[in-house]
Image (cartoon, rainbow, N blue to C red; front, side, top):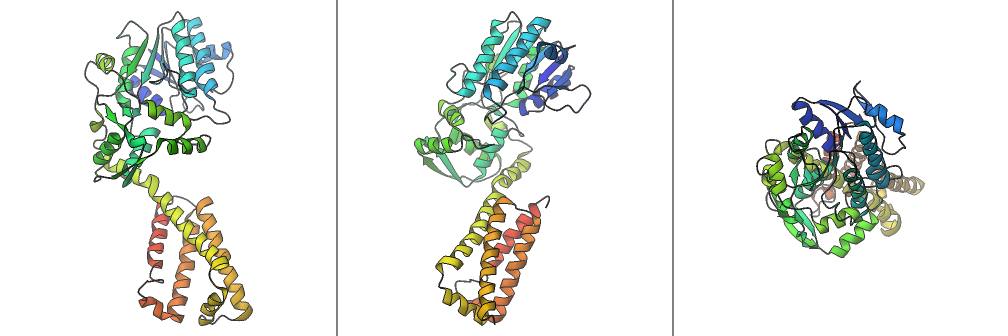
Length: 417
């Protein structure tokens, strides 16, 4: 069949396209920006007239709607992306006699307890009200190597300390994206005739803290320390991050985690013809690559934050805290006196401050080279003029070596600038 997959470049949409094509269907990709001749442009953030939908649906037998957002921004709004655009699409499908429509919703939409869920449910209900063969597929938390949420949780699992919201006892039953795609392909192929709502879950029910521990073990790490974080604190942080672009913690996602993402496995087993895969089998041969990806997700940002703090703290202490006379005395030992010493003092302070700010707002290879050059120059001058610091028990000069090592790591991991 000719299957239009809306949201084909997304995480779930891409998996659906791959599965459908492997089963012999001709896939037409509905995407925001077309790349291939068979792609069709679909922008859920703008109004679509009936004739525009007719053009998009020309020659299509079946439609799968896999468009979705987790967090709103100025352009992408839940009511537009999850409700209005899909409803218009479903109406067009009904008018044109499309044989089957599959709506990828979310487990929890039936309760409508968040803006995200309510927008999903509105589209679900509209599809089910139409005289058309419509399937509403509500998966639990979906796992996949390239999935944003899965990557986020693998990153958290790789940390040596697991901060567990409200003890981390929330119930989850993640499903693998490949099995979700297999189920959708079976629905599209007409293997199951009676349309309606199906809830898709994975083969193993776990608590949130167990999920992180399983991911961590699968990636080859030892056990992590665990600490419970009060729910009120997580809720407060979620409110602050609610409108931060790309944030995985919002009021909606925190509420979703609290309510859990689990259900009866019977329907999933029936649709697959076998029990679904459990969480412990999700990470397999690609564990090494996923381990490196998880570490890289937090290692470089942490090094940059620490480095920025060192530069900024040095600037603040030099300008406002440390006795100016003592600073001038140190400069005198480096053969800098009077106006030259004062100018050097303020130049060094400004350089420290600028380096600290740039480490956060404009990191790049040129910056790491400049910082390494300044540190190396400082170290040589101090080693020559104040050699006793080389064997000082607190190692004030030798501590520059780990800073240089951090800069080398950052320089090596940068791909541009």
